[in-house]
Length: 508
Image (tube, rainbow, N blue to C red; front, side, top):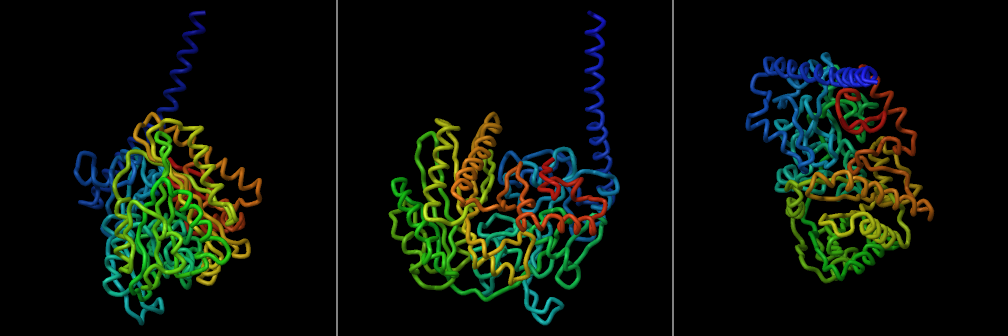
């Protein structure tokens, strides 16, 4: 018996050693590669213990994303980045890429013990006048910029772009489609990119547009980091005057009034048919106090005070109100509050069609799931219902199309973003389980009533979701994979880089 036990223990030890061996080898290899990069790019490699390393590895929205790469590569230009990617690819070294770092999905843009590439220094912004090779005046933005910085640069010049709605969100939003305050007329934010400067897995720098690489150009407008690292976005530009808009926080006792106003807004003949109007609604809930608070952000792209399409929202009693005719950048500046780091966070998304009881259904499912799963916990839960209209989907197709390829004939729907904030690491698994349960409950009810919409929005997708399977209702993915193979035949960005992958979730 003692001999048998000894053999079992020895076998277990050998098995453990075998499993640890590759990890140790990978760690040693990465340390060597960091040294190689440091020699090749002096001053651009940040090592543990340095202030720049600390700054870059903690420039994320959620503490959960604070991981420990062996080194951080802060390239100063596309050429150096391309050479660095070639070194990483040739050595099969795992690396992550971060621009804004605003996703709370752990493993999306960070890495443990690999190399972290950050686009911090790709921060140039300029307006390029016509004539130029792209055929019209455009805005050129380095991928290290936040949307608030872009608007602070453009609005004083009377110009604007179809970009993100929240100040601290980074340019990577464009690689997931992106919803804008101007989407109802212009489509996804990515439909308004004229050119991507892309570093590929081969270590090449490409200018990707509808003339140079039309297939890759299409794929980048929703393909995340499966094709390379974007270092610059060249975007369509338009004249921008004053707008009406701002932020309202409602009293808890008026949550139902808010839901009713929102339901009226999306009903036939409602404010959603005003393509100058856009909203960013949200409801927070505490399972500890059982109190919910609704907030609303709206933008109407005219200088008309309190336009009719917003009246149902603006007449509800509030605890905070900062709305009026102003400049667009000042409205976006109100969202700087979302730039502060939260302790621990996660989110998941689904989609539900517009119908005559959709807001009440979503809210009741949200509250009942929270109370059954997390009763008495001091956490903050939320759901944000983001309207995607037929006019937006028509504009997306008219504006060049994209991998999402959603049919306007199928009608309007909500992207339903479900999220959670909490403080203790011990709650991580429980909070993830709650979010997945909430998504399942929402989808089960929507399917039973015939109101489920088969789409997962990449920018709000959760760790275990695969947005690409929903693109084009399943038709886009084979084409996206073929394009990835064409431009990255060794699969550098599908094998070595964490994130949402074409072959399924691969958050390392």
